[in-house]
Amino acid sequence: KNQVEQSPQSLIILEGKNCTLQCNYTVSPFSNLRWYKQDTGRGPVSLTIMTFSENTKSNGRYTATLDADTKQSSLHITASQLSDSASYICVVSPTGTASKLTFGTGTRLQVTL
Amino acid sequence: NAGVTQTPKFQVLKTGQSMTLQCAQDMNHNSMYWYRQDPGMGLRLIYYSASEGTTDKGEVPNGYNVSRLNKREFSLRLESAAPSQTSVYFCATERGANSGNTIYFGEGSWLTVV
Image (cartoon, rainbow over all chains, first blue to last red; front, side, top):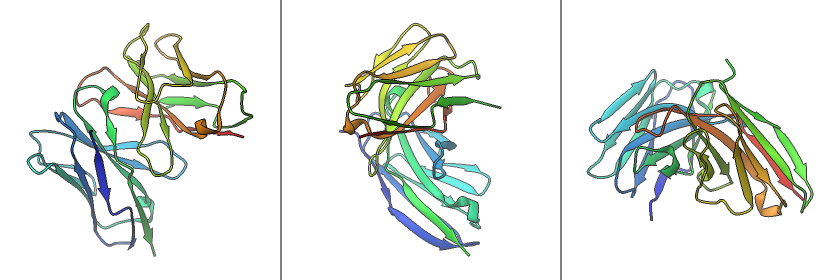
């Protein structure tokens, strides 16, 4: 069964600090991996999309890495801000269509003063 | 700058009642999706429409029906609501069923069935 596991489940960091969120997947075959940010009470918003051949992709202070051999991805947030407080969801696609996505349960990040 | 619009935002239903969640997009996307999000679980696909005129079941279709009214609109209907359908529902769109396309989500509809 295709699965996406994220760690940690939740994380609290001080504003200005960096953090790294982890995603392990067992989805096969593999087409792409996505990271989404979901603010409380809002819909998910896309941060990055990486295909098999991409190792790193950045979006401002967000940098995602992918190791397709070990089936692991990470999302690194640099110089965190209060507005980074949200859930971060890892999503893996075995094919090219969104009808086959496997969603992780997310990491809940809280950035405090 | 509407993107994907869902209505209603909040709804409380009694068991056995019916209702329809509406979704409209202004991005001229071909594919539309309905997901549900439950605590401790990843989003799960209920139904999708790869293009206007087509609909297909997703992972958890039981108790739901959908209608792709036109290219812009995709509705989700609960014919006889059950407490197990208490959830947050998200509509999503994609330009086409192709790898690498960004998927855009609506803001969600919170449904409680009592």
